[in-house]
Image (tube, rainbow over all chains, first blue to last red):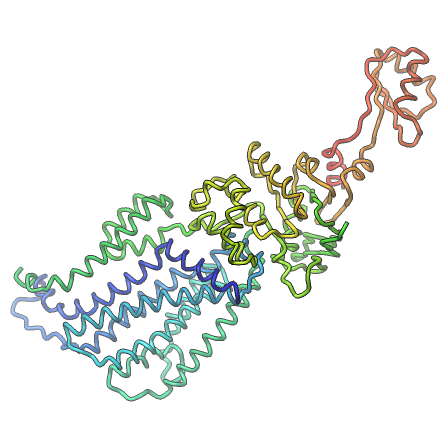
Length: 260
Length: 66
Length: 300
C-alpha cells in the first residue's frame, strides 16, 4: 500500500484541475440554498408572477423545516446521483480507453491501492459536497422555518451518506468492469430503476440499500427506528465491501485492455 | 412589484454569487482549454444563457477530459 | 556476459489468432537488441507481455532479479504512442512515475529533474503535458521509462513517429543509455537497427524466425557475389568459355558465388588479368540489412 499516497495525490490533482473539486460542491450548495428559499417564498413568488386567478385564496401547505430537508434529499436523489454517475463513470474505463493508464499499470502498483485512491478521493469530493449542501440548507432552514434538532439532522445525513457511498462504489466498480457507456447505463439501472422498483414492490421486504433514503428520514418525521434499518445499514456496508473487492479485481483483470 | 421588494436579497445573494462563480470558472476553462465536444461558441452561449445548468452541462458534456 | 532476461515459449493467442507464437530468447546484460518485423508481426504484444501489461497465454518471462521483488520495478517501458495525463506537468508526471516505481522519496525530485534535463525537457518541466508537441511527449516517454534506473528498458518503436531531427536526438539518447542498461526495442526501420544493436530478433507472424548478432546474421544471409561488368557481351562470353568456376551471366555481366568455391577477389582479378579481358568494373556485393529483412521476414 506504499503507493497509495502518490495515487491519492494524482487523483486530487486531477479533480482539482478538471474543476470537479469545485463545481460539484458549488452545485450541491446551490441546491441546498434554493430548496428552502423557493419553498418559503413560493407563495410570494407565485403572487408576484401573478398568474393566479383573481380573488383566489390558495392555501399553501405549511412546511416544517424537517420537510425541507426531506425535499432537498429528493433533489440530491435525482440531480446529485446523476452528477455522480456522469462525473465519475469514466474514472477507470476512461483511463483504459485513452491509454493514460498504461504508464501506471506497467509499474509495481497494487490495484487495491489504485482502486482505493479513486474510491477515497471521489467519496471525499461527493460527501464533502453533500455535507456542505446540507449545512447551507440547515442555515437557511433555521432562518426561514425555525430550528431543527441538530442530532436529528446528523442521524439523517449520516444514514443518507452511506447510501451515497454505496452509489459512488457502484459507479466506480462498474467503471472498473465495463466500458464508460455500459458503466453509465448500468449505474442508472441500479441507482434509479432499482430505486423505483424497490418503492413499488418493496413492501414485501424491509432490508435493502434502496430503502436507506426513506429510512434516513425517520428522525425528521419523529418516528422510531424503522424495522430493517440496522439490517439495511449492515447489508449496505457489506455490499460496499464486496463491490470494492470486485472493483479492485476487475481493474486488475481489465488492465491488459488498456490502449498501448 | 412590492412583493419582490419584500424578498430579502441578502438571503438570495449567495445563490447569485455561487452561480456567477460557476459561470466564470466554466468560461475561464472553456477559453483556456479551447477544446470542447462540439463548437466552442455553442458552449460559451450555453454557459452564459442557460442559468445554473449551463456551466454544469459544460463540465459534464462539453469538457474534453483528455 | 551475464544473462538478464530469459523468455521461454512465450505465446499470446486471441481466439484462433496466434499473435505471438512460442518465442524463446535470452538477453545479456548491457546489450542492445532490436526486435524487427513488419507491422502486425506481434512486436507490441510481445513487449507488452514482457512489461507485465498483457498476461501470456503460455510461456514465461523471467528477469534475473532479487527474490520477492516485483520485476516491474526493474523494467522501464515506452509504448509506441505514450499517453499522458494532460493536466499534469512534466516534472509532476516524472516524479509520480519514479515514486510508483519505488525510487526513494528523498531523491525523487532530483532524479526526476536530472532525467528531464537528460532528455532535453529541462526548460519545459513545469509546463502541462497537454501543451507538449509529439516530439516532447516522446522524450517525456523516455524520461518516465528511465527515471527509476531500470535494468531492462523495453521500447516500442521509439523513434518511428519522430521527424528526422527528433529521431537523431532520441537515437543519441538511446546510445548513451546503452552504456548503463539493457535495451530491447522494436522497430521496422532497419537503419536504426543497424546503428544500435548487438543482437537481432526477427519476428514474422508472431514467430521468432532468426536470432543472432548483427554480424552473424549478415554473414548467414549476406550472400556475397563478385560481379564483373565486361565492356561487351562478346568479352563476357569469352570469359564464360574459358572459366572453370560456377557462374551466372546476363548480357555483359557475370556474377560469381565465391562462398563454395574457395575463391576471392584476388583469384578473380588474376584470371581477368591473365587473359587481358576488357572490363569496366569488378565489385564485391553483399546484401544489406534491408535485403536480409525482406528475405527472412517477408518470405512465405
